[in-house]
Length: 316
Image 1 (tube, rainbow, N blue to C red):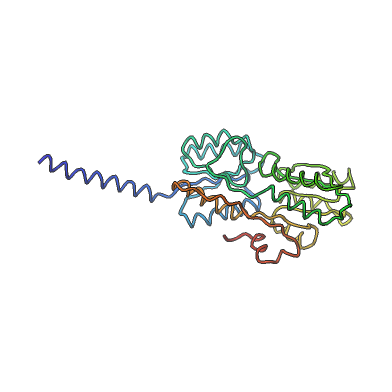
Image 2 (spheres, rainbow, N blue to C red):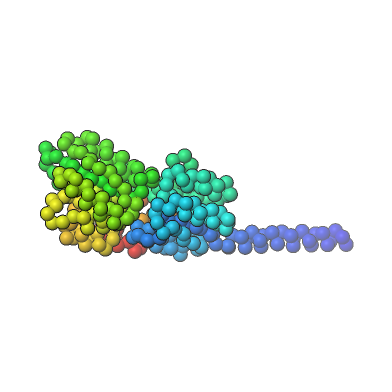
């Protein structure tokens, strides 16, 4: 009799175990998406891409971001919160390449999968990194800028970035500097950072132009920076202007030929693939390494299907 009871009990245990495993499998993954700041077209498109991937994967997403892009402590606090809440994965765009290293290590030690989106860290590896080739972007942007000048014509450039301590900005500006070193009569007058402040970018550009009227080329490496530079320019300034971003204002400036070219990174795709990569990692799979696409958009090319898709990033 006891043996019969024991034999009946074993299948019940197995059934209970299988039921719990199935329940765990059916529970959606919880993923924290932590961007550099709350606003901005770039981050808005990234979040829309992530939401699209949520529909494809069934993952539960929660979005976190400080108000200001330079609030490194705020980003650290959000990662700490994600660790405490026991998220399965974190998608993070670190606003500083060293300030976030310790908390990312802590998250990985807690068994949380970490995907870095757009920017990386110097000493700490994530589970996966997805970004664009910012060195290639810098090279192509410089080549396009040089095409506006004769071979012997002097070039005196102003570069205004957003955050100085991100791997993407480091790679981009480093590539621009390398290209200028190889170009005869090409000189970078100033490298400044606006910390995504339109007012700071405007004042920086205005002061630089006033101090050196020979500046004839400006790179604005972020959307708010581009808005500020545009506000500092007047019709009397014969300055070539290349900007990063795809805001409605920038698109209008491109069509009006205030901006010579817009560099647009597919941040929608960045957000979409970041979520897919996080889910694949949680499922024990290895995500495919593929760079995020980008394009240099001019007035002549802006109405092509490919560039319209990038300028108005609303679908995968």
